[in-house]
Image (cartoon, rainbow, N blue to C red; front, side, top):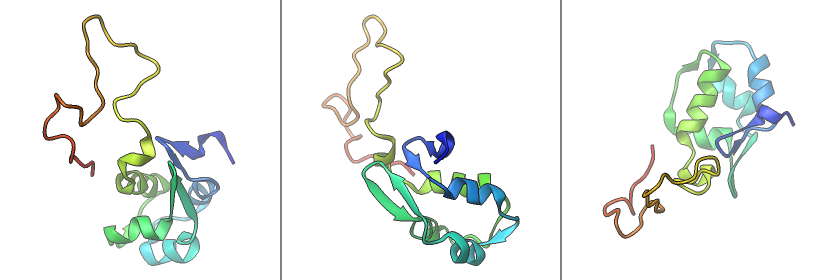
Length: 114
C-alpha cells in the first residue's frame, strides 16, 4: 500500500493505483465492472466503490482524479475523524474552540456535509 493511498481519512488502498493506470474516459458501467467491488475504508466503516458512487449516476469519468473527487464527495464526515480538530495549531489567545454541535453552536447538531 502506498503512502498516498489515504487522504482525509479515506483509504483507497490499491484502488488508487488501479485508477491511475486505467484508460479514460471510462463509463460508469466499466468502472463498476472493473473496480466496483473494491473496498474503501472510511474511518471505522468500509464500502465498495460501487456503493459509494452509484447514487451519483454519472455517465462517464474523465480521469482518476475525477473518480477520487467523487469518492471524497460521497463519504460521510465520520471518515475525517474528530471535527474542528487540529494537532498543528493551538487555539489563539482568547479563542474558545468547541466541538461541532456544542451548546453555543445551536443548529449545528444536525448539520450534514455533502
